Amino acid sequence: MRHVQVDKNVLIAGDKRYRLSAFRNIYVIGAGKASAQMARAIERLLGARISGGEINVKDGHTAALRRIRINECGHPVPDLRGVAGARRIAQIASLAGQDDLIVCLISGGASALLPLPAPPITLAQKQKTTRLLLHCGAGIHEINCVRKHISRIKGGQLARLAYPATLLTLILSDVIGDDLDVIGSGPTVPDPSTFADARAIFEKYRIWNKLPAAVRARFSSTSEETPKPGDNIFGKTHDLIVGSNALAVDAAALAARRLGFHTVVLSTFLQGETREVARVHAAIAREIRASGRPVARPACVISGGETTVAIRGQGLGGRNQEFALAAAIDIAGLRDVVILSGGTDGTDGPTDAAGAIADGTTLARAQALGLNAAAFLANNDSYRFFESTGDLIKTGPTGTNVADVQLILVR
Image 1 (cartoon, rainbow, N blue to C red):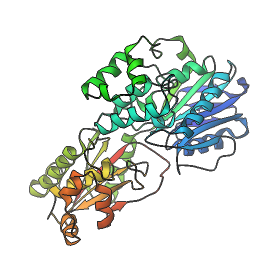
Image 2 (image 1 turned 60 degrees about the vertical axis):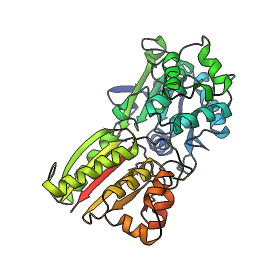
Image 3 (image 1 turned 45 degrees about the vertical axis):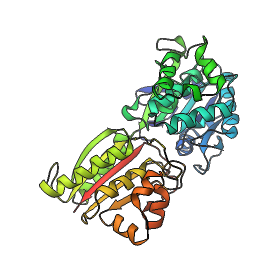
């Protein structure tokens, strides 16, 4: 890890130093699509010093570990395997003492992979709430605000369990702006959001009456708030971002320049409805062809972030595939334009694809196969569309997770 090293008997994490001999036990816990690779790196650094630990990962996102237990579970909708693993993680944290060090590994996907519902809410009720938020087009900040307040572990509550142990959290950010309290629903950081904030989200998307009764009851009564900034439980915690979307976009820009493209980074704060954002990218491609703005050809425009999809159809896909399909419609006939949208973790929505590629010939090729792109888009069926045209991007699990990357290439 670039940001974490061991020098003799000292663990160096950013600007923090930890004398390893001062700790009786060192435990490693965490969750996320990239947490297995993070755990592998920590095992290489700390080796036999690790007393044990557990991480929850998405099915298939594993690595060979010797001292840290891997628990595969469901994502994006949590399952019982995730609950069992989250319970064991909470137990490790709560049993650690003041002379122990806990290294917590958090990456994108941790919110769904650390499901420990607050009683009397059940997993099934939490699953329904998650689905409602995903389907209505709520943003990740909004979804995680709700998750914190129906959980026993999110929103700083894992730090509450770990106190008074020393807690170091290493984070791969998949969140726009790298807000620590949003990444993985902030299990080890202060939570500025409240129950009232979460209820306002239900009202905004008009789903309050669709929620399970137990969830409505929790937000209608006086419940213990998540720990806030200034709480003394955070006196022995340190949080360090070791990877982000901005770093991925910068690396992509460097590679593009080396390949001879005139390159510009559009934004790493991309958000909004996927189809609309895709149309903006298609318009930029047209502008480059017409005027050489904002960059001359051969051009590469890079953006990053995380868009959202309001699901109205019955199809299969993810935000990146839907982005590419919407863009394909707007760049139809432009033979010198290619647009890519992909998830850096290697999975897009509930599919085995990271995303898709569209170019000026995509619609013509689809029509030759008898496919109506607009109908597939209306049905949120981008996966089957690009599966037919052969334009899906399938990388398998990448071992990282720093949101999405979009590319526009113009010859």
